[in-house]
Length: 100
Image 1: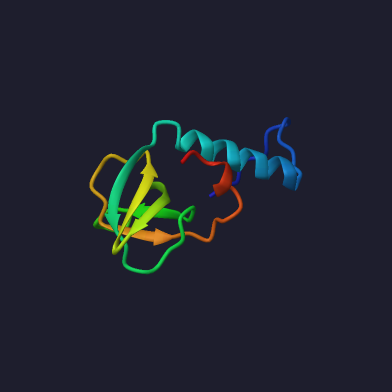
Image 2 (image 1 turned 90 degrees about the vertical axis):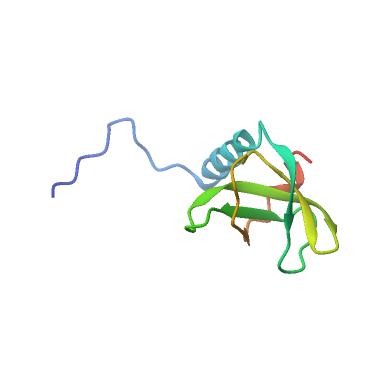
């Protein structure tokens, strides 16, 4: 296996620029988001970001917890397919600026 050389225009990006790029991609992910209800297996705070997984454990997309009612949560997500499991993420910083 041979490694390709980096493109001439490639450069190391400063942390602030990398952070902005990640936030832009996260905001784009939520552009077509709609509310959906899912069961909650553990206590969670509204505003928390979750990863949605299918039955095989593959990542489907993100969901933001909007409201907790008993053992169910109302989430904002662009994922329309069947969701088998929710995983709370460690992403805390961008959630106040996300829709919902």
